[in-house]
Image (cartoon, rainbow, N blue to C red; front, top):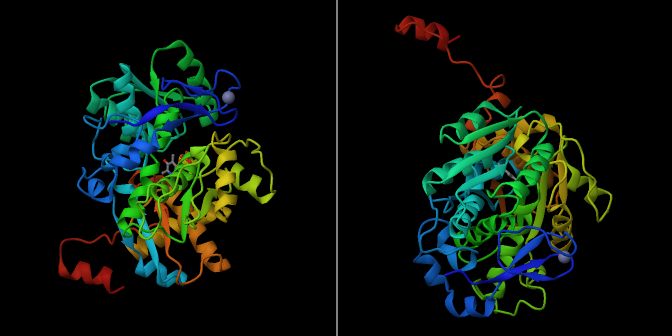
Length: 424
Ligand SMILES: *Cc1c(COP(=O)(O)O)cnc(C)c1O
Ligand SMILES: [Zn+2]
């Protein structure tokens, strides 16, 4: 059962029916899902969530699609790991890793796509499409396979091999566009007006984006229905960043958190900030594409688009759709934003691998190096509960590290040969 009452413009506040629609007819502002929270509050409970499926659909009451038969390849329910070694290295005693690199198609995008695909099938679409920085292509192709619908996915042609193969294996129509992600996205927006396809991050965007709220819910549930003091989140469009915050606030307002009184959502449910939500939201971008961080640095309420040139291709969105909304979240939460130097991306990947045994992609390298920076600056105190979101898998971006890792010892199958190499 989905408790959606419609869509609402984030700029002018006008409401529209819950259709496959992402911009306001009146002012072209972005649309967001509106819920009937009064009814959700009657239905939802910690026990009901805990008894649900071991995927994002355990939070089905808070997602904008019918959860009875979702397009579910088991996105979500990923591990939250106490990071003792990395914590020791950084002087943090209460550090956790949300390891979303182990999702079915190896990135957090499975959360958003599972919701968008379910909604697309509900609307009767027969083609699932997207403009992708890489991981989205993999996830859309995988979910389309599961749903038995066609997939048409668009990627920038300079993508890593692991992402091209990681999408191609599900046999979508894969279109490599000679251009940046922002150009791919513009092309897809034109196509969305002319083809009756469900572009998960264009005409399905209001529903799609809601899937990222589960990154907030899960962390709260895994911490015993409590929220962290700090989170560190990598951002491209900024959508995930805003939705983790929204998820935390929904949990608080619905009375699902330990020791927190339920409260009403107020007149604008999508900007609600429950006073018990004191988590500081820290955004990580890579220096080669950091339009949101630049705006935050300059205390500018607008985001000036940039042309990306970064190793972290999954974060390379020069014109971020949720940029201004994520700036508000940074400010409302007392968080910060940091652009990681390009030459710290691989060191972040290596640090996580060598301390915690987790191989993340370039976006994760950005996140870990941002965390290290925050710890060094004293923005995070040693005992504060901190969660760092690792959103994608290192096997997809092997190019980034292949020249940096140690080569194997080459030996003949004899003891002498081994010892000659090993004892050297
Ligand atoms: C897409 C992506 C992000 C950023 O998501 P946004 O919601 O666009 O900010 C972060 N990490 C990885 C691995 C991604 O693929
Ligand atoms: Zn509007």
